[in-house]
Length: 118
Image 1 (tube, rainbow, N blue to C red):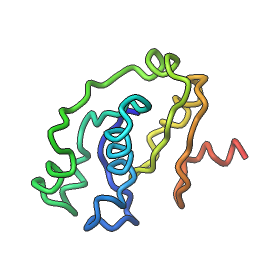
Image 2: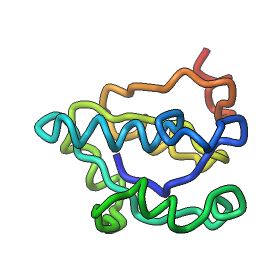
Image 3: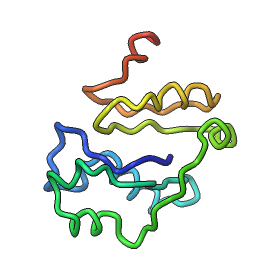
């Protein structure tokens, strides 16, 4: 999994454990043999709700990951994860095109393509 750090509007930022992408980072830190997770950037909108120092604490010493071409990279993996964020990035279509088994986070918001799948 590789994406920008962003916060869904309905999530309380006082508890970083409630942020889907931070939770995924922590899970990957606990199980590096199972997860390949990277943050490629931080969405500037996050700083309207959280101080930069706090975001740095959330990320720890983790360096920013390089951006990857999802169409080339994802087919090497058996599973892919789609984690909630702020907006529809059309990531779901890229994930589906990869041929990976896709794990979707249950969330109140969803991309328009969800309607086409159900």
